[in-house]
Length: 364
Image (cartoon, rainbow, N blue to C red; front, side, top):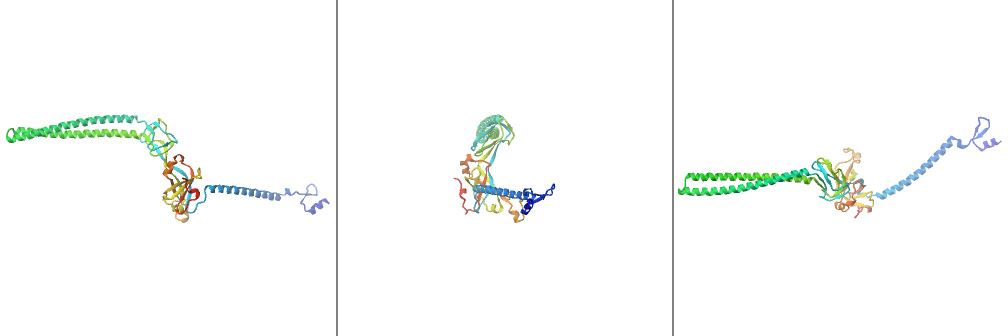
């Protein structure tokens, strides 16, 4: 009777293999029901994940949009890094490092001495050349004294020749005496010419010795390494006592007067950018400070492949390099804050009629 009631109520049953009686079957043991429940749980988990991801994505998008707000048409932007020109302080001649007067991180002024090379051998050569120059100077003085002597001799010979000619006209002397006076005058003139030549030779020898001394002075000066511009020492590449070849690098410094950011823009935008256009640089480290800049370079050729294309679709993929350079006076006023390699964004205004957004007005 009980089995019949359960059958009437619609409960699922199985026939027991050990007994002919019917046994009720629990719905949890059905494979189909288990799969349906598993799918439902997976759907709920997926839905929860989607909700969480959408919330996080929305928050992340809001944060990114706060840092990188939308810009009006007429202003383009791209990612880049602040860069400064690097200047290698290198030796002109091979030699040994004698002194290092600055170190990494030091700010240097134009003309400041950074290092000195060992110049003792050049100084000895300079001393020799200076001694030779002094000797040549004495030779010049001696030649000039001989020149004065020869000029006196010539003057005397001319006077005697004039007297001999006067006496010969009156018959008070012989032709032989007149000829002797003529030969003496010719000899005096020849001696004067030779002495003048010796003076020139001595002067040229003096100039050569002076040039040699000047050459060694230039070498000594070139072995004193100075900063060509205002900047900051980025790397020290050698130590005191090391022997470097010609062109060996001692320091690498950053030129604080030339700081820029390179970005890449597609063809349609890059074609509208002109050199001298206003720009703004926004660094990730200083998101609230907009740095005014100017476009100083627009590439004439595409930087990304393909470089030569035939179709409009491929032309849209071309990217051109744009350089935004920070004003030199502003850089010198904030030299301590200049950092190379900081990432950020550079905004370029190719339409002068468009106003800068509030966050890109430019820091004072």
